[in-house]
Image (cartoon, rainbow, N blue to C red):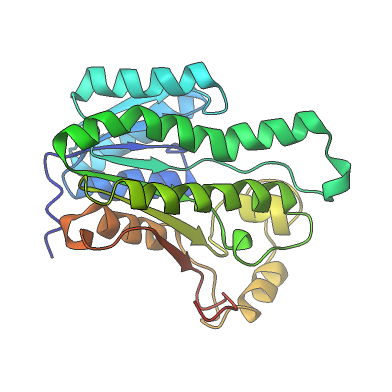
Length: 261
């Protein structure tokens, strides 16, 4: 199936590894030009080179911290300067610290809001003028299943990503006649280095076989997901085939979500 994405341009956050890398790689495979964003320049450059070598796509890197307002402005400006347009924005990054809500002071809350919510607001605000001028655009936010199904110690993420869902739904209504669609994806347990941080030893990437088995036992499909399975949905939502869909919240979780909708 041709997703008709050739010659279009995407801006993808958190693209040096994990879900962000998988998204950038698949969009490049589909023929898109891709601007990759992450905080650290060296792993970002390595990721970009792998994508070039494996897909032949045109990719561009922007080392920046989406928690900073000036960096959000710079990200959009550099991507537009390099490619001339941004057709697809994928808002993706890490997550704030874990812990009891009562343990976080105002500074921790402010940082969580900057990372999870204000980065989405700022980057989206930057790309929308071009999208509305072209009457074509896709805003796709990556959050987590915990925002729909809250978990103890995940409060910073739940609270701030809930704001993203409210923002995205409202924006989808405001942009519905402008050719711009807006979606939020809530992944469940996905095989990235964050699994180790959250459910394993506390170190990125380190999850024991017992922990993996325990995770799988709570998932109807009996396994954790792969980053490519998030990327596949992003590619579809980015395509013209999803033009009549907007304002949706998608949980990609192996059936683990416990609500009817």
